[in-house]
Image (cartoon, rainbow over all chains, first blue to last red; front, side, top):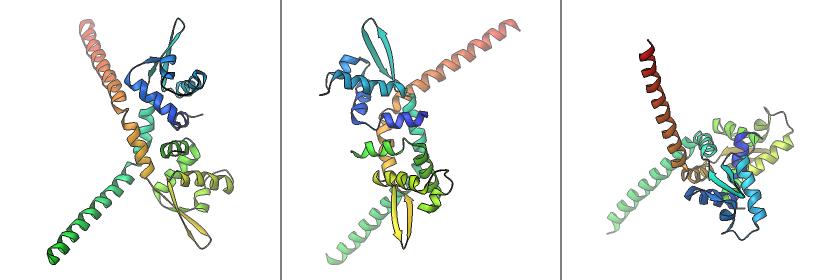
Length: 115
Length: 115
């Protein structure tokens, strides 16, 4: 699977996005990561493995503990891919802004007339 | 499935990313979209349906033709989610830049000594 495929697949799951959000706060062991989730440690381990394969998590094994930390680089690549489309949503936001300004002006004028 | 789940799932496939790239050039019918791909029209139709369900494609049916155009809004949302992690890769890029500057300075000094 290509890099971007793995990254986008990995972040397409809300539990995996929540794990990344937790690791963005601070590095943690697998047990610590699993704690707030109402699913089995095994389920969380599988999610962590998906994130690790996408390069989003680095794991260091110290004794019996697996220490995980966020690696943001694949997210950077995903963001760079999305940036190709930035002009499209910016054009839409510009159009929306123009529409709102025009509407406000029209409303002001029409209030002016009735007041 | 939640919005972001659908969007990230949709763009996790290289053919679907290529379809979006084509529609970013100009709107097209399903037949036109399928043309450059070495897969069946049926396979492309399925990909288009996934993109449509993620809100990335708007389809207008005119007679027997399905006209598709890009809707960038879900990509905007995906980009906004990734922006939460921007500081992490920027910190890493800063560190890399500092490392390169320090190394260059060191190399210049060491060249100065040997010349």
